[in-house]
Length: 215
Image (cartoon, rainbow, N blue to C red; front, top):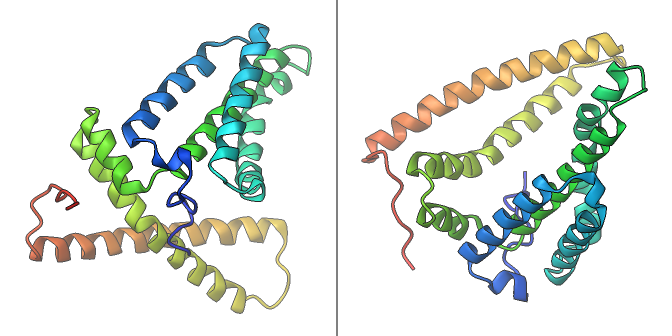
């Protein structure tokens, strides 16, 4: 897995990249609050929020294909959750709420995508800590960012080995069963790796706090 999978364009040199991380975090917080409290009846404000985030992505020179690819991963679960209400009521009610959930989710996701692709992760964590976020949560985010690539690499290797041992095309049931087994084995391997990593960190003087980066 590429090391820049999550924040591929975070080290650019546009006006958006040069903004202070704390300024961007406060701006994102205000944007999310406005989006979350705006009802669907005030659709011009939601349209303005959409134009704002699209403008931000354009000014940051984040490719459209990259944004659309990330949206393609988001839409299936979001649409499934949003339209659960109308489907449960026989398609008679709940459409307005479903549309509102979908719009808010997409706008919030695009705003978050803009943030992580205009701010390297280390300055972002430092800004979160300076804004008062608990250190444990900041450290958890740091470890998640560092080791999610390791977990994904492990998943790719396991998936490749599974495909190499599959002769015929499996049925849908067997595909679901194999995927569940794969995720279970990935969880076990991740826990074992976490124990080894923690032991290695303790042997190197880990004190439970991340050291501050030297500028």
